[in-house]
Length: 389
Image 1 (cartoon, helix red, strand yellow):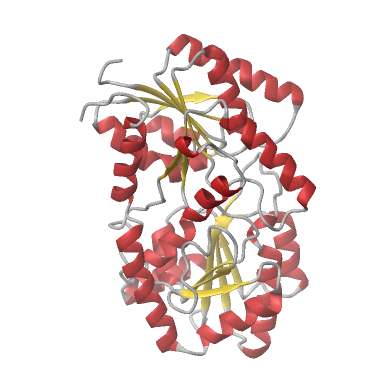
Image 2 (spheres, one colour):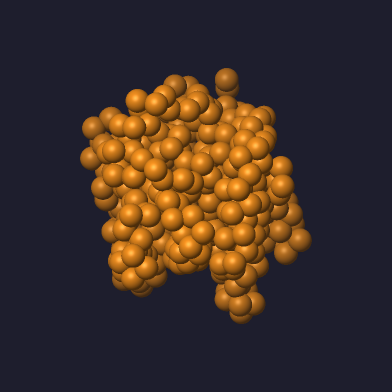
């Protein structure tokens, strides 16, 4: 191998490529690496192409479909065989399985996988857990290295013998601490943005969530919680910074719109599909993520970096970020009353909000800067190939 490595990154969506992978890809390209990115075409594809990223479009791979999945394997097999990549790095769940099969069949020298949180979790029925655990265990045999984002998953891998210890590499998760810098909007900027989003000027508190519009992010429970809070605080406002993917497994958008009308929440909820996440975070008083399943949620990292107190569910991933009663509060998943009480506790205590927010920013700076992750990522690659700095 030469010092200029050829790599294929394969992921489930163009949005994931844009928000999660581009910082890593930019870092590697500056070191002279050649990176292709493969994903199904969607709303962000044009912007990636416009910025001269090397994109390979593949079929949708977020749903199990025998014919479609076989076509994806064949497509990736031909691509890998032709381009002769030094490393094939796969991401996410189903596409991670299909791409690793294709890479192995094509004789890729090294295969790396980042699950970003395994699909199976502790709240699943045991039989379903076992099925997905077994699939991932088999895939581990095809993989040279698995990047794990949180230490709880490392412990789980060792405890359940999911992946051989020598193949596990803890990488953590990181964000751009300059972009998410904790600074507030000035008064003019705040007024402009609130008018743009049509958020009433008297709104307080503004509770926010930045996440795909899917059931598993806990939107049902969040809407019910907002209804309960509104009974005490009529000016409460929920700012949903979401994303809708055309190939989403469990799209919640239509139901969300119906619930807003059903509970007469039109003046209490704003939904935006824009991606200026840091500006929207600056409008929020509290960030929440009542999710059922996570890897290491980037949304919480960004909120903490912006000095926001966080209310999240006590699940793998969220609890690896949120330090209960220090940077935020953890509540059981799917429990509306507990979610409401946690939000009210912060709403009614400005000093607590500020204390948790400041502690979260310090914690994020110390552990979740993307520079830390870049170094770990490169060291991970060095452990399986000979890389000269």
